[in-house]
Length: 227
Ligand code: IYR
Image 1: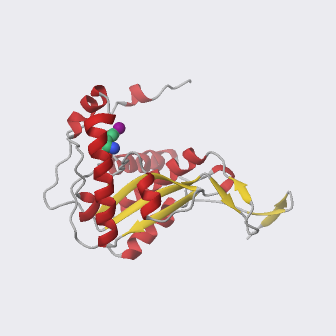
Image 2: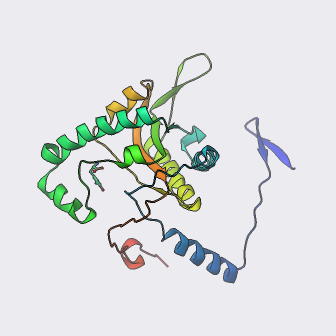
């Protein structure tokens, strides 16, 4: 392996498989069609999922790029039934208040076609809840505060990687955002530098699962090419 130094830091030579245009076109099309079969699912089976699968999914998420390679994320994995129940009870308490009073009429109307409400049975039924925390700052080996950069972008990317890894495993997930999320810091005993970012139940879909009939925006609507 060829190496060199930049600013006194080690670099290793990198190369990867590349493809001729035809194969590239085929691979990118195949990947798109596969990724397009991912759906947000709210109905879960309680069928167990091997812990090793969850570990691989988290390792995949943690390959995401991050500001200054700080990897400012922590994935809390909850399978303990008592803790799942506590999370469900606390989330539903907040969601009840949100749906009844905190969300605007426009917001509630925008959600109607998704069929969501304050009830969150998946928080108990799904075998795993992955709660993604962002690290607003960190500590070095001397316990001095250190900075993280582009934390939301970084943790958003890692969460995207997490969702594709879940899809790849043949499992389903849901980007759940109970609001406010402070109860998660408390129930999971997280330190002050860690802030809840997303709660993602992971599992098999329920035997009979329905998702809203959605279409995705066509490429013309989501891109601008400057040739
Ligand atoms: N957090 C609530 C409400 C909700 C908000 C949006 I924006 C959604 O896309 C879906 C739901 C809930 O989880 O029900």
